[in-house]
Amino acid sequence: MLQEGTPGKEGGFMEKRGFSPGEVAQILGVSRTTIYREMKKGRLTSVKVANRRIITQHDLENYLGRERTLALFRNQE
Image 1 (tube, rainbow, N blue to C red):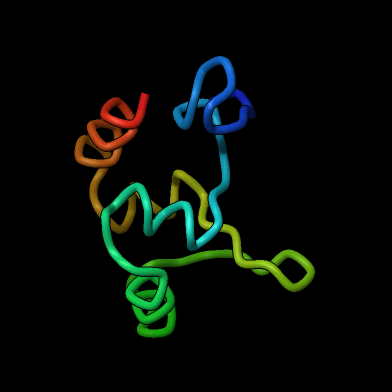
Image 2 (cartoon, rainbow, N blue to C red):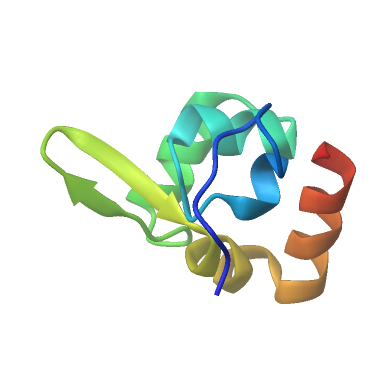
């Protein structure tokens, strides 16, 4: 599995395991509202931690497909 990391730090997005809806929106080039709508419809899964929503890389892979997800992360580095 991927190592934990922070965007902009050594390793970039690919090392992160969980993302906020805002980060996913930025990666996909859509609005946060779109991400929340997809979560509400059950198309994009997430976990609630305290008062935050976390979208894992696994959630993104299920939503977009593994190859497409990996390609997006490669473009972020």
